[in-house]
Length: 82
Image 1 (cartoon, rainbow, N blue to C red):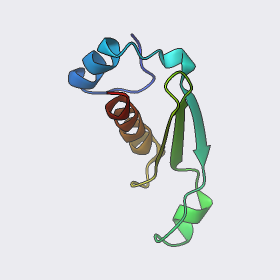
Image 2: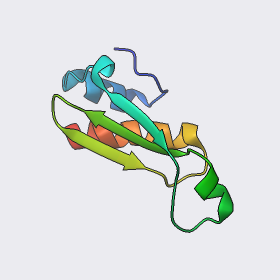
Image 3: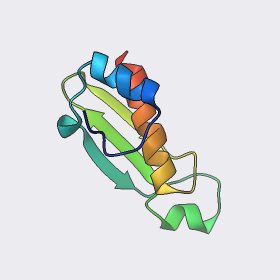
Image 4: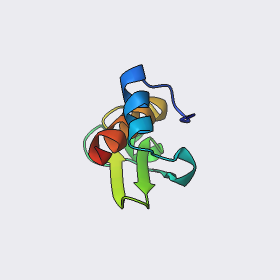
């Protein structure tokens, strides 16, 4: 299984056990909101993932970096699928 982000081995194994198909995960990047000033409202750092087979929807925007938010969103998606 090849996820589009680098995750710890435990998350990769869990995703394999749950038979999560990375091809079916829908990714959307949106503008953030809330506190954080003007920067957070101008960048598309918020990551939304949807996995249709299990109807799991995840939205993550804790960090300023889109890359880090994307990694955390994938972790959250795997944990929710469990």
